[in-house]
Image (cartoon, rainbow, N blue to C red; front, top):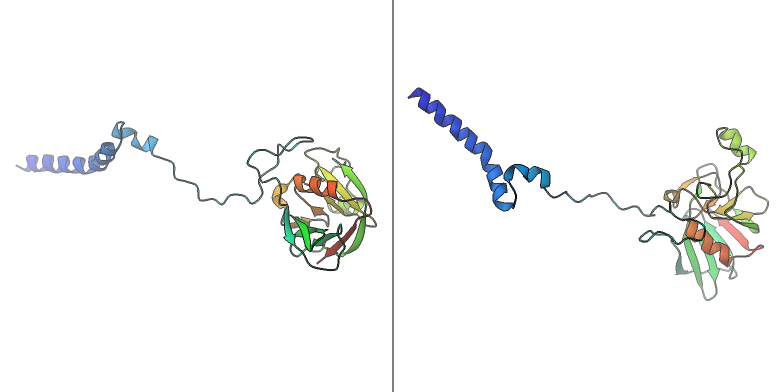
Length: 214
């Protein structure tokens, strides 16, 4: 009798263990023991990046399909600045190209980190496509590990275009780190997405006034 009771208890325990698997098997079209292997993946809850990477952006090539290649937008803009003036608002992390009729083209930018922000009025004195990069001595003293020269191209931190601001070491330029756009991480230069700086490059001329506000 005692042996029979133990056998019944073991059978009951086995039935309890198998019940969930049988329930899943009734809902599946394949053997219940494969259910965990074929369970549907749970959707990811990670937020999508604000700026898609531009790793495949090359000279003369279109941005990859589905990538957010530009932040450009036409917005209302008031003020006393003449059309064609470039306004950089570092606190907003936005660059505005003033248009007629109280409007402007607005772009997202990256700006100088704490201690490297500045303000003032300058003019564009030079423009370069796929510029080479020679870090200034001030930067090399802070970062002696940097290369002394880098040819223009996808890995160059100046990106696809550079607009040089006379009387300063600063530039408005593209970037090989699109995820830094909207952040304060540079040594004072104004960073843009490559597609944005190409667009701005085509719209402004040497001599264009650039007003940097904090």
